[in-house]
Amino acid sequence: MCPGIGTTKVVVTNYNKPEWMIERCLQSISDIGLGFILVDDCSMNPPLDKKHTSAVRLKENVGAYASFMEGLNRVDTEFVMRVDADDYITGFPTIHGDFDGYIQNIDGKVSIDPEQYLDRPYCGINGSVIKTAVMKDIWPSDMRFYGDIVAFARLITRYRVTMVEERMYVYDQSASWITKMDDRLGFIEMAKSRARKEIITNKKGGYCECLC
Image (cartoon, rainbow, N blue to C red):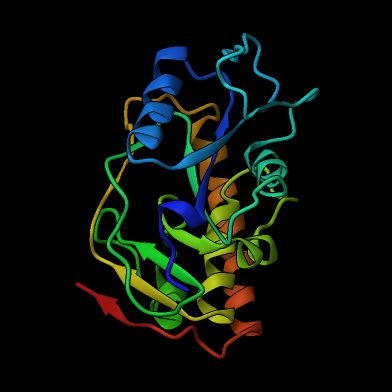
């Protein structure tokens, strides 16, 4: 079955993002008719109120990847999409074919070729439509930073995926990073190293096809 509005739910993770930014994200999801689960990772000033009936407030800060898993475990649809609270979407991609994952090539840098990914890991999880059971299998909830790099490596080597060229996910580059640059580079290198090991271990290659 191809994913659609009725068979896809969005998990939004938030930590200390301003309320206007969260509202922009949630409104963009609602505008195209998608349901969502908002997970707040124990923000210092939680922006959740009664109008977000699907909101989950964590009692302690567990990190973006563990908090996403909290939301993922509550998804009741066949497909799921991940969106960060400081980003937003502009539509739902036109999808054809029977695949486990439909990857949105947000800025033209994403590759679903495992060989290319070994040389230049660049994640395409956010905004992509992935089977919920598949997402649960690939998601590294034990990682606190850049776990999506590892998840993507697992996705393209274990499952059949395709590229959707429509770009409907908008990164907000104005959002400030929590970690210092030196720390970020260290976390990124650790994630890339783990991703390379995943690809070497599971090197059967995902099924790649481009839908333009």
